[in-house]
Length: 319
Image (cartoon, rainbow, N blue to C red; front, side, top):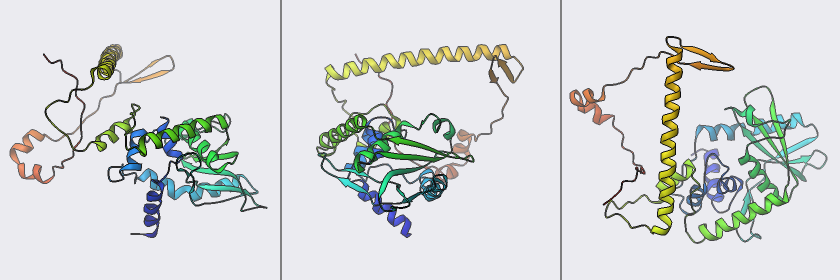
């Protein structure tokens, strides 16, 4: 194991012992990567936690120091350094901040005056990192407010490399009201769920659905469990109503699409005001799996990969 990988593994182990900025973004429902259930798993059952080692994460870690250097180039007179994680317990639960960098005046280089969070946002990053309007993704805003609360500093910088020729730098000032709400959310989550080993309610995020499957890896096929009618019937009613609306919306959208195709006729492109429509011819090559199974079952067996997941099927009425 390389030293960098060993350091990252040790950091993850330490990181599970407290609630950090990305955790609060997930708990409050503004993260695009995680939700309350996945945070719960990360803190209580690391074996079932999601493996977060990805190319995106490795790229982000590799580019942090590059972004730090570019930040100091854009802000002469400021210096940065990477601190160890900070953990405090005076809020009734372990609250931590794994900060990318502290920012200080070059004349007092070891006295932090701000936080710097270095981000890579190559996919449509320009549209959500706007210096002029001080706009950045909600998840990063929550993360930085959390770091400011933990450190008691008043200023944070979000610096993003969005893939063009300019580093986007958005300052975030401490907001005591938002910080208090985050502290309360963190305290409730830790005391009511992590400490008691009770999974939190999902928020409807994709990450939560994946985490729910990891919470209950062992299943009981039969008999069906009788859910409490008072709670489950209301939830089921909502589910069926939304599924019906979804089906109706899909049907209406499909009808509109087909009508536009009929209007376009043999043309692959069309314009409607400022909108460009496209209905292009394409060729797809695929393997005849039915024939392959019949004629070469040995090859099918050799290259078949088994994976398990749980799928929530459409409810059926019982007599």
